[in-house]
Amino acid sequence: MNENQPVALGLDLGGTACKLGVFDVKSGEMLEHTSSLVKDGKRPGAELFDQFCKAAEGLLRARGMGPEQVVSVCVASAGILGPEGAREPAEFELVTNSPNIPGVNGFNIKEALKARFANALTFIENDAKAHGWAEWFYGAGQEPQVHTLVGFTLGTGLGGFVVVDGKMIRPAELGHVQIDTGVDAPFCGCGMRGCAEAFVSKVAIRRLGSEFLARYPESKLKEIGASSHGFDPLPIAKAAETGDEGCRMLYEHVGFYLGKLIWQLKRVFMPDVVICSGNIANDLHLLLPGIMAVLENDRLLERQPVIRKTNLGPAKAGIIGAGALAIHGCKTRT
Ligand SMILES: [Zn+2]
Image (cartoon, rainbow, N blue to C red):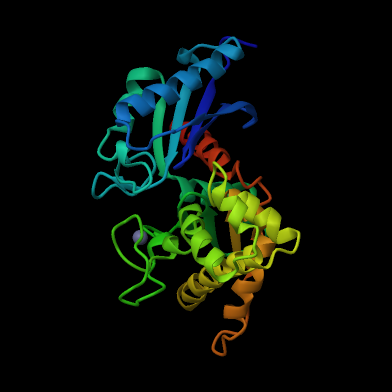
């Protein structure tokens, strides 16, 4: 590999893992990628970033490259970005509030990247919005009939984005739109009750596992819950596929609440397409009966958005978005 080849790094930091990719700046091709487990999101930001930067340096070494070849880095992170007033990936410096990775709160990511990759431009974006950029530049956004694109990242939490004719709408914290106003609605990681994330996320599925086991005591949920991974979405989805009623109804219930959120978004934006990514989106077909049960009751706006999985690879959309922003950013600035 050419030791002068300029490369960009894309890091997609979620609640469970940080996915990293090395991209060729000229072609946009992803040359290498790996994943580094977060393990404990309460660890100090400096420690977490040291781990991720080491993983990135390891990827570069595997291609016979050094950190001096990195001309641009983009970190896509779960959470609210700052400082106050910043609106674009080149302006963001830190995460001010990340319920699922609290260790990074207040940690200056931009400075940490600058110290590690001295020749690089630095960009920071919300992880779900990085998926939005990937989708706009490489996915559904390229279809001529698509003007308003809404998307969800269904992972540890629930991220989202709204892109209208190439403009990213902010803050559009779709996971924290309140969809249950009841006084006993479940708490969300943000401290409020009734947010969409409290119903549609890995964290929510873990809570619902016990509830649905109580309702369906014969369900495979019993052995799934007793396993070392607890109520993990993946085995629940697998059991739903084989006809387990409790597991199927649990997914339908999650879909029902995602449908409520899409209903609200229809009222404001009427998206042409709703794109789902993240590991839970692999089983979108199990959520769709619940989603459509809500949307098909709509007598005001009867047109339904197309709801589908990303074509970019559900687990890769964030990293592709981070890479696209790093490449796009350095091309417009050099
Ligand atoms: Zn919330």
